[in-house]
Image 1 (spheres, one colour):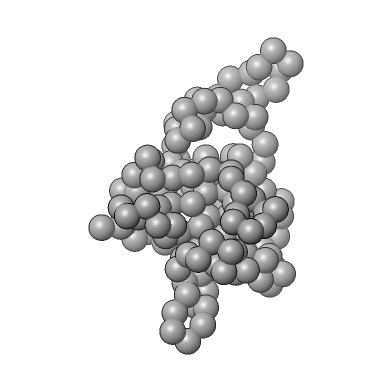
Image 2 (tube, helix red, strand yellow):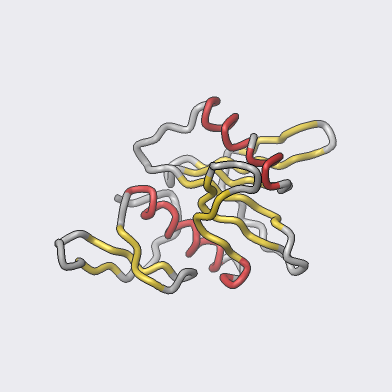
Length: 144
């Protein structure tokens, strides 16, 4: 399925059970190709193309003081979490409930920015002095 990202060349193979796997350029290994993983790999490729360092990304770990897991966190040069990225399968609609769930991650991880995407719709949520600001796009900014 084509997503709302640039086109990337992915390495995909079948495992011994004829299930597709995709090569994760950050974890440097093949991962089961689920619809959510398809979105996550697009996000990783897009971020790296936009100048984000792969070595500052953490994938699928547990949030502090929680049993919830994040998809991707990008750390700044000082090693502080800067952006949390939540990926959903393309079939999962992004609703206010989904946005509220992800906005709660801001407190758990103490990040200033969140990207929420199902590969078709992208939301960039920024914490500001007057609360949260939600933008209906995938951010094309590059970090310093």
